[in-house]
Length: 536
Image 1 (cartoon, rainbow, N blue to C red):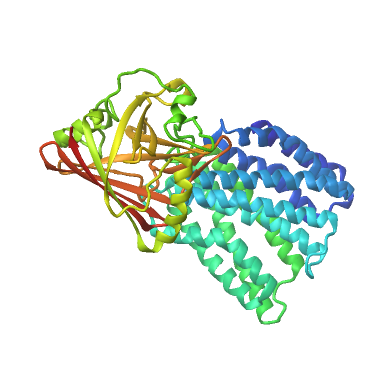
Image 2: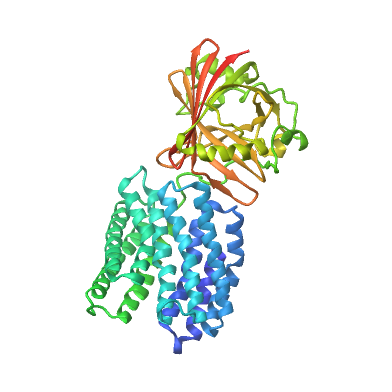
């Protein structure tokens, strides 16, 4: 991306030199973002995903996209604008893929995601301008100014907000609220402009208040480099001045009185924002470390995917069995020791169950939440055919027969993989789960993959103590810095699902355990499974 930055800056100066006599100020400002600001922002954002295929592809095709943007402006041939539009759509896809893989936490990363997502709208409005497409009653100049809006404030301000959020050392409710306003404002303002001047004025006012708090975060944040702090703070100070003119302009529209003319607004929100807000901040962030607090992406996950039917034959038909002598779901619970989990406090019976699972019998009683039962009836028919996660309708105790089978770890892509195959009393496969573990940021997680048709669902669980009992959960901690979660993985992308689960394993008597498995969707409980576990 560094090469693209140099290429973009050089191309912009060539354009200015060649077209100086008849330069169109607004078009030049739009090209300034396309050729200079976009590659710099992409370089800063892409630092934590350098091995991502989409990031590499965007870096490769940027010269073509930049050249097409220049040619679209110079020649007015709409085909060139299509190329830039397509490039911004790919950036939108990058933002979506980051958001889907990570989930909405932490909010600082979500702000960055939306900055990337909005750029695709900028590409569309650029295409509409060059192609002279009539959208509602918008003039050609309005299309161009809308393209500017999504290449400037809608693109860079959320990204700047995200970078500041990475500087915060603890969860900050005010920061979350301000981030949500900044994320939503480009659309609320656009809706206001389209349907109601009063709504536009309200949206602009809320946005101005949010930017005041953004400036406060900038002024109070700790930077490693003084020059970076000065540049980003200078940018925030200028932004406070320019955004005040937006409020005055919006008031003039709602009161039907001309307070500031459009040419004046173009100068303030074009030239001043470009060189007084965006450029200093980008240079400042280039000087400062913008790395996120946690590696949120590329978690270790199984490379094994199912076909139409799973069941026990998933392992046998793919020749995955490897004689490894595994007896339990884990080799030793001490592997999971961390600041959150002390294996020495754990009940001996619970330890024995996880290290010698084959020596225990299980009974289960499944309870669907009343509101979810209509969906459970449909799900039961599908799971019976697929032979995976086949829970039935439950409400009675049923014996589960389990077997631990070693799995070829090279094929799976994780370490020390073993399958726990569980069947019901009708010898139907209930679960085919591939157990492994991985360590990230000095914490070891239980990493469980369940093969699904052409994908897999991976539950990454963190461990913690509750006295001598054990709790495993996929619920993400408040600051969002953890690998725990439930993910759907395919060959093409990974999605963090709106699901969470918690296991609570307790000791009742010697070698007799009880467990409760609770699951939530969008925060609402929909499934609870009770287990009775005892040694054979």
